Image (tube, rainbow, N blue to C red; front, side, top):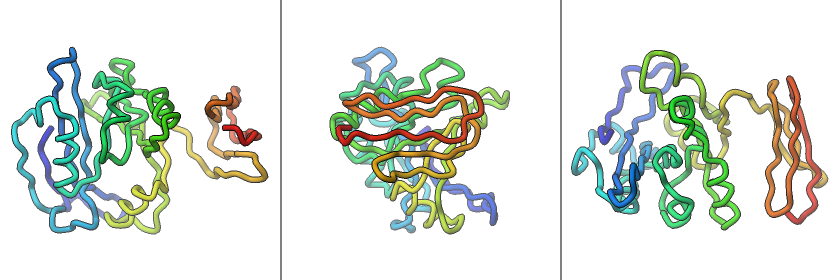
Length: 231
Protein backbone atom coordinates (compact mmCIF):
# COMPACT_ATOMS: atom_id res chain seq x y z
CA UNK A 1 0.00 0.00 0.00
CA UNK A 2 0.92 3.66 -0.48
CA UNK A 3 3.35 2.76 -3.26
CA UNK A 4 2.80 4.17 -6.75
CA UNK A 5 4.54 3.03 -9.90
CA UNK A 6 3.97 2.59 -13.62
CA UNK A 7 4.93 -0.59 -15.48
CA UNK A 8 4.92 0.26 -19.20
CA UNK A 9 7.28 -2.66 -19.91
CA UNK A 10 4.39 -5.08 -19.30
CA UNK A 11 1.97 -3.37 -21.69
CA UNK A 12 1.26 -5.01 -25.03
CA UNK A 13 -1.25 -4.58 -27.80
CA UNK A 14 -3.63 -6.93 -25.96
CA UNK A 15 -2.63 -6.13 -22.33
CA UNK A 16 -2.65 -2.81 -20.50
CA UNK A 17 -1.34 -1.91 -17.05
CA UNK A 18 -2.90 1.25 -15.61
CA UNK A 19 -0.58 3.24 -13.31
CA UNK A 20 -2.19 3.20 -9.87
CA UNK A 21 -1.76 2.87 -6.14
CA UNK A 22 -3.78 1.75 -3.14
CA UNK A 23 -3.80 4.32 -0.37
CA UNK A 24 -5.09 3.71 3.14
CA UNK A 25 -6.13 5.58 6.26
CA UNK A 26 -6.86 4.13 9.69
CA UNK A 27 -9.65 5.26 12.01
CA UNK A 28 -8.44 4.40 15.49
CA UNK A 29 -11.83 5.31 17.01
CA UNK A 30 -13.48 2.29 15.34
CA UNK A 31 -12.27 -1.30 15.83
CA UNK A 32 -10.67 -2.37 12.51
CA UNK A 33 -11.97 0.85 10.90
CA UNK A 34 -10.10 2.04 7.85
CA UNK A 35 -10.40 3.41 4.33
CA UNK A 36 -8.63 1.89 1.34
CA UNK A 37 -8.66 3.89 -1.88
CA UNK A 38 -7.55 2.77 -5.32
CA UNK A 39 -6.08 5.73 -7.18
CA UNK A 40 -5.84 5.39 -10.98
CA UNK A 41 -3.89 8.04 -12.88
CA UNK A 42 -6.00 10.41 -14.99
CA UNK A 43 -5.35 10.70 -18.71
CA UNK A 44 -5.73 14.47 -18.52
CA UNK A 45 -2.64 14.73 -16.28
CA UNK A 46 -0.08 12.73 -18.27
CA UNK A 47 2.88 14.32 -16.52
CA UNK A 48 1.98 12.31 -13.40
CA UNK A 49 1.49 8.96 -15.10
CA UNK A 50 5.17 7.99 -15.15
CA UNK A 51 6.07 9.82 -11.98
CA UNK A 52 6.62 8.00 -8.70
CA UNK A 53 4.67 9.83 -6.01
CA UNK A 54 5.78 10.32 -2.43
CA UNK A 55 3.12 10.11 0.26
CA UNK A 56 3.38 11.02 3.92
CA UNK A 57 3.59 7.99 6.20
CA UNK A 58 3.44 4.32 5.31
CA UNK A 59 -0.04 4.00 6.82
CA UNK A 60 -1.55 6.91 4.94
CA UNK A 61 -3.47 9.75 6.53
CA UNK A 62 -4.51 8.86 10.06
CA UNK A 63 -8.21 9.16 10.71
CA UNK A 64 -9.40 11.77 8.23
CA UNK A 65 -10.83 9.93 5.23
CA UNK A 66 -11.65 13.10 3.30
CA UNK A 67 -8.05 14.29 3.56
CA UNK A 68 -6.93 11.05 1.97
CA UNK A 69 -9.41 11.42 -0.90
CA UNK A 70 -8.26 15.01 -1.41
CA UNK A 71 -4.64 13.83 -1.61
CA UNK A 72 -5.53 11.21 -4.22
CA UNK A 73 -7.30 13.86 -6.31
CA UNK A 74 -4.38 16.27 -5.94
CA UNK A 75 -2.07 13.53 -7.23
CA UNK A 76 -4.08 13.45 -10.45
CA UNK A 77 -5.83 10.17 -9.75
CA UNK A 78 -9.38 8.84 -9.92
CA UNK A 79 -10.46 7.48 -6.54
CA UNK A 80 -12.35 4.22 -6.06
CA UNK A 81 -13.35 3.14 -2.55
CA UNK A 82 -12.29 -0.45 -1.93
CA UNK A 83 -14.23 -3.13 -0.01
CA UNK A 84 -16.25 -0.85 2.33
CA UNK A 85 -17.74 -3.76 4.33
CA UNK A 86 -14.31 -5.27 5.02
CA UNK A 87 -13.11 -1.78 6.00
CA UNK A 88 -15.98 -1.41 8.48
CA UNK A 89 -17.22 1.71 6.76
CA UNK A 90 -20.77 2.95 7.25
CA UNK A 91 -23.41 4.23 4.86
CA UNK A 92 -22.85 7.68 6.36
CA UNK A 93 -19.22 7.49 5.29
CA UNK A 94 -20.24 6.81 1.71
CA UNK A 95 -22.79 9.63 1.74
CA UNK A 96 -20.59 12.26 3.36
CA UNK A 97 -17.28 11.64 1.60
CA UNK A 98 -16.71 13.63 -1.59
CA UNK A 99 -14.45 13.35 -4.59
CA UNK A 100 -14.53 9.63 -5.36
CA UNK A 101 -15.59 8.09 -8.65
CA UNK A 102 -17.02 4.80 -7.47
CA UNK A 103 -17.13 1.92 -5.03
CA UNK A 104 -16.20 -1.74 -5.21
CA UNK A 105 -19.53 -3.56 -5.20
CA UNK A 106 -17.63 -6.85 -5.26
CA UNK A 107 -14.15 -7.86 -4.05
CA UNK A 108 -13.12 -11.50 -4.55
CA UNK A 109 -10.52 -11.67 -1.78
CA UNK A 110 -12.83 -10.16 0.83
CA UNK A 111 -15.72 -12.36 -0.28
CA UNK A 112 -13.83 -15.64 -0.30
CA UNK A 113 -11.80 -15.10 2.86
CA UNK A 114 -14.08 -13.14 5.19
CA UNK A 115 -17.48 -12.84 3.40
CA UNK A 116 -17.06 -9.07 3.39
CA UNK A 117 -16.74 -8.56 -0.35
CA UNK A 118 -20.31 -7.51 -1.26
CA UNK A 119 -21.82 -4.11 -0.46
CA UNK A 120 -24.91 -3.90 -2.67
CA UNK A 121 -27.18 -2.81 0.19
CA UNK A 122 -24.85 0.05 1.11
CA UNK A 123 -24.81 1.23 -2.50
CA UNK A 124 -28.60 0.91 -2.79
CA UNK A 125 -28.90 3.04 0.34
CA UNK A 126 -26.71 5.73 -1.25
CA UNK A 127 -28.85 5.69 -4.40
CA UNK A 128 -32.00 6.11 -2.30
CA UNK A 129 -30.40 9.22 -0.78
CA UNK A 130 -29.59 10.62 -4.22
CA UNK A 131 -25.87 9.78 -4.29
CA UNK A 132 -24.98 8.08 -7.57
CA UNK A 133 -21.62 6.35 -7.87
CA UNK A 134 -20.04 3.96 -10.36
CA UNK A 135 -19.68 0.30 -9.40
CA UNK A 136 -16.53 -1.80 -9.73
CA UNK A 137 -15.66 -5.46 -9.20
CA UNK A 138 -12.12 -6.67 -8.59
CA UNK A 139 -10.06 -9.63 -7.41
CA UNK A 140 -7.68 -7.77 -5.06
CA UNK A 141 -5.43 -10.81 -5.38
CA UNK A 142 -3.03 -11.34 -2.46
CA UNK A 143 -1.86 -14.94 -2.94
CA UNK A 144 -1.05 -17.49 -5.63
CA UNK A 145 -3.48 -20.20 -4.45
CA UNK A 146 -6.26 -19.17 -6.89
CA UNK A 147 -8.62 -18.49 -3.98
CA UNK A 148 -8.83 -14.81 -4.83
CA UNK A 149 -8.24 -14.85 -8.58
CA UNK A 150 -10.61 -14.42 -11.52
CA UNK A 151 -13.69 -13.64 -9.43
CA UNK A 152 -14.42 -9.97 -10.12
CA UNK A 153 -13.84 -7.73 -13.14
CA UNK A 154 -15.23 -4.90 -15.24
CA UNK A 155 -16.02 -4.89 -18.94
CA UNK A 156 -15.34 -1.53 -20.58
CA UNK A 157 -16.97 -0.46 -23.85
CA UNK A 158 -13.96 1.14 -25.52
CA UNK A 159 -12.71 1.81 -29.04
CA UNK A 160 -9.20 0.63 -28.26
CA UNK A 161 -7.01 -0.63 -25.44
CA UNK A 162 -5.17 2.55 -24.49
CA UNK A 163 -4.82 4.38 -21.21
CA UNK A 164 -6.72 7.43 -22.44
CA UNK A 165 -9.63 5.55 -24.01
CA UNK A 166 -10.11 3.17 -21.07
CA UNK A 167 -10.07 6.02 -18.54
CA UNK A 168 -12.44 8.14 -20.61
CA UNK A 169 -14.99 5.33 -20.83
CA UNK A 170 -14.67 4.44 -17.15
CA UNK A 171 -15.29 8.05 -16.16
CA UNK A 172 -18.29 8.12 -18.51
CA UNK A 173 -19.72 5.00 -16.85
CA UNK A 174 -19.48 3.00 -20.07
CA UNK A 175 -18.74 -0.31 -18.34
CA UNK A 176 -20.27 -2.89 -16.05
CA UNK A 177 -18.96 -4.91 -13.11
CA UNK A 178 -19.45 -8.66 -12.79
CA UNK A 179 -18.40 -11.70 -10.73
CA UNK A 180 -18.89 -13.92 -13.79
CA UNK A 181 -21.81 -13.39 -16.19
CA UNK A 182 -21.32 -11.26 -19.29
CA UNK A 183 -23.94 -8.67 -20.27
CA UNK A 184 -24.62 -8.57 -24.00
CA UNK A 185 -27.43 -6.01 -24.06
CA UNK A 186 -29.27 -3.81 -21.58
CA UNK A 187 -31.82 -1.10 -22.16
CA UNK A 188 -35.24 0.44 -21.70
CA UNK A 189 -38.02 0.17 -24.29
CA UNK A 190 -41.69 1.15 -23.88
CA UNK A 191 -41.30 1.36 -20.12
CA UNK A 192 -39.74 -2.10 -19.88
CA UNK A 193 -36.17 -2.66 -18.78
CA UNK A 194 -34.46 -5.69 -20.30
CA UNK A 195 -31.15 -7.53 -20.27
CA UNK A 196 -29.47 -10.26 -22.33
CA UNK A 197 -26.52 -12.08 -20.82
CA UNK A 198 -24.44 -15.23 -20.67
CA UNK A 199 -26.01 -18.11 -18.65
CA UNK A 200 -26.57 -17.19 -15.01
CA UNK A 201 -28.55 -18.32 -11.96
CA UNK A 202 -30.58 -15.16 -11.35
CA UNK A 203 -31.49 -11.81 -12.91
CA UNK A 204 -32.53 -9.09 -10.50
CA UNK A 205 -34.12 -5.74 -11.29
CA UNK A 206 -33.69 -3.76 -8.07
CA UNK A 207 -35.86 -0.67 -7.60
CA UNK A 208 -36.84 1.69 -4.79
CA UNK A 209 -39.18 2.48 -3.28
CA UNK A 210 -41.35 0.19 -5.38
CA UNK A 211 -40.24 -3.43 -5.27
CA UNK A 212 -38.45 -4.68 -8.36
CA UNK A 213 -38.40 -8.15 -9.85
CA UNK A 214 -36.20 -11.25 -9.64
CA UNK A 215 -35.95 -14.20 -12.00
CA UNK A 216 -34.34 -17.36 -10.63
CA UNK A 217 -33.46 -20.48 -12.58
CA UNK A 218 -30.71 -22.36 -14.39
CA UNK A 219 -28.93 -21.03 -17.44
CA UNK A 220 -30.91 -17.80 -17.64
CA UNK A 221 -29.87 -15.67 -20.62
CA UNK A 222 -32.49 -12.91 -20.69
CA UNK A 223 -35.04 -11.13 -18.54
CA UNK A 224 -37.24 -8.06 -18.41
CA UNK A 225 -39.31 -6.03 -15.97
CA UNK A 226 -42.15 -3.59 -16.62
CA UNK A 227 -41.62 -0.32 -14.79
CA UNK A 228 -44.51 1.60 -13.22
CA UNK A 229 -42.98 5.07 -13.27
CA UNK A 230 -42.90 5.17 -9.46
CA UNK A 231 -39.43 3.68 -9.07
